[in-house]
Length: 312
Length: 223
Image (cartoon, rainbow over all chains, first blue to last red; front, side, top):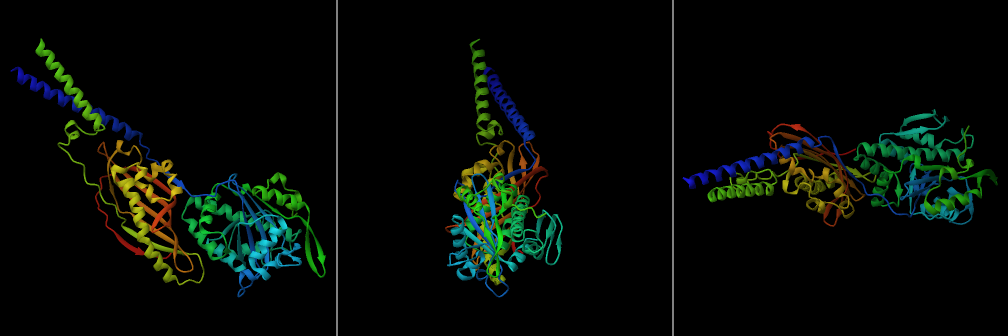
């Protein structure tokens, strides 16, 4: 009798203990379920340029017409792009194409004359010689290529700071989505601008910064847009930037809004050299180039008014 | 009196042993289940994408589009393997939920450093087994876009999964899981590795799974 009682007590004890404990366990699970966050979770990583060393890219626009290789045309658009990966700051420093300088290919002439003689490498060497900045890479595009690239990404939203009377149309101040031909027209317009080539160079910087802003916005919304931009960019440029570096630049762009990239143009004055109109660059540029070479950017407060000419 | 003490002692002993069983089983199993009697773990489903689409993004102009698309179609299955392995380990197999070690070989060395910070989305989460019992894959699709060079060689690939699954929760309810986004892959030796990622996961109350996905493949060209 006692043994039977013992067995019953043991069995009941085990069953009750197990059931109660398991119930406690499931209660804990239920609590975890109620705590489960059913909202969106997000994973995000893109390799990015890092380190304290600045990166310098010479951005060139060729005036070559259809049938002529881009790298045999004159470099009518010249911009130094400095990037500081550590501070996520950058600078676009335009150089007027009529700047009368010593060429790496020999002699003194307009700065855009180096490329037809020695290709992009000669243009890079000329700008290095002028500024003291050593370039890591160059990117070269042309009229048709810019047009196609913009069209292939679906147009470019440009924030036009002031109205510009172009060759084929007027670009009113404000934000506009432009097709490739419109972007090219805006970037090429010079004659209607009070400061001519200086303002044009600054406007080309506006286009480049618009591209940065749009890429950032599109990538943030849909990361797959990176390949649309990479494809369009690589199809329509000649560049020494390796694909690994391009992807890291895309990653860096996510933390570098256009507001952290200053846009300025080399200071100088117009004049005549023989029968041709030229630009004589000011000595004021030297200190700015040294500043840029040191860390890849120039702060807005350090930019003289003359380097951001007021078109009005 | 002595017999009563024995009985009380035995009862306490059984209670302690029962408690230990529950603790060791994580509170999910009864004492009998904890010692392997009365239940068995269901087999882990094998995940495959229902549809895989290949696209191409050439990096040069005037290319033979058919040749480049063929290269992209050739690369897509290898990329699919990597993404499938990620979702199998991260979401389908309960043994590897929240386990960075189970997925790290699928990533480049730089990307591996970011896995811990993103494990709650790259996998079901480190505490997923406190909520979920099993995950059953639903019909899912994958788009693989390849960047090709002038020789129609695939130099990079981008995978866009639309992953769907139903989790059976420990409390008997179900949760609908979806994972979407973009994975960027690079060739590392003979393998594709994930070098960048941007994934979103959504969960909402769901119903018991009713279908079993099967695989097929098709191809199309990207703009």
